[in-house]
Length: 229
Ligand code: MD3
Ligand code: FE
Image (cartoon, rainbow, N blue to C red; front, side, top):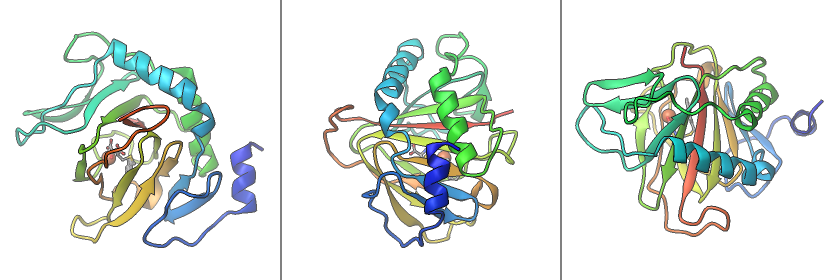
């Protein structure tokens, strides 16, 4: 049994309110049917993860994608893995190559893949085999409006997200876009696993507050692991 399973067996469920402050590293919470937050799960791996993120950014520069409506996203994005999520005026899709360079996206580092697999496993999604990782780069003021991730070919697989650097307020709505969003604080090292009944919920990120993180400076990084095909 790994450490996270042990934590979850000792403390399998904690009732959730409308606000979580991330002050309880090592705890796990059920957010909703199929959704888990593993507080601080990635924190011990942060130096390795940050080095991997820097290498990914060096191979495929983070860029502000244009959404089909024509606006430029405030979050800069890049990808690693066999497939990468891209957006332009023609729409959203997964591509095997970086349209900016024409080269394949950088491979998914083994350290990232194993962490994502282990987190999925801990949340009850055994055998998660992501083929895509979207890497989001936030600076103060950057935000992500409410959306659903439904461009993936395998919606039975969960999405695993790892947050590093500056904290963010995650907006977590319902299955209907009009459902009132709850607010969830995501801090450095938090990992969230979204699957099952929560796989298609609307979600977003409030504008990032000004701040300085000891390991990342003025950046927040969020990596999401997906089964795109
Ligand atoms: C809930 N990223 O890249 S991660 C995204 O913090 C995205 O950068 C946010 O939403 C970020 O698409 C949120 C948490 C997350 C990721 C995927 C989900 C929550 C999700 C898929 C379904 C439901
Ligand atoms: Fe999303």
